[in-house]
Length: 196
Image (cartoon, rainbow, N blue to C red; front, side):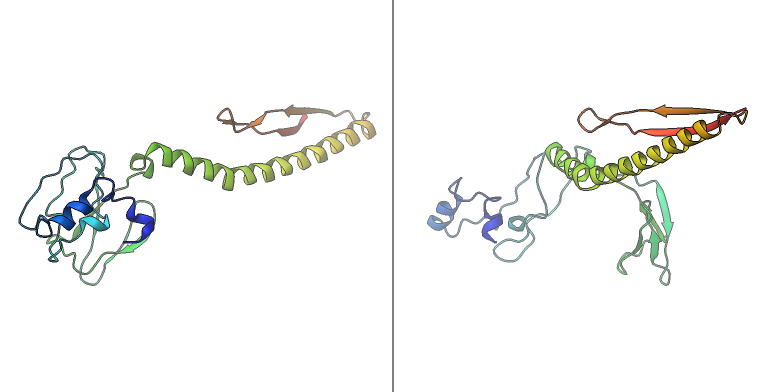
């Protein structure tokens, strides 16, 4: 295990390293333990194999429902056709060792926001806002400001030069405020139309 991940398994903090050094034969090889935990990671390096090479996790049950995925959609596969389209539109190839007797694969979608901790979701939203939305909104605001300037110049020119052509022009100019701090995004836009 690398030093970067060693702190995730705090052997030194709970003195289990000292215990293992003093009692080399006490590694739990013949002991089966049931763990009732709200946040166990079955992919953690320290939970994969015992010292004699056997699997550490024999069975795992998610009784909380937090990882449940509604699998009501079906896709059919056979030996020749093993590529299916997921609900998000991705094409995936079903592994060759998956051979359901009826040829049906069930699929579902689980939003990451239902799996990730709250702080991680806040960080991801902040990064998404800063890296994607802010530049996009700035470009949009610049384009709208340019369009607004052109529209105002067009209207001013037409109202001044063609004020006797028996046509009336109506100019709607709606201002809205761009704000990231108050959870609403508002744009500035103009609508020009000829009144009959």
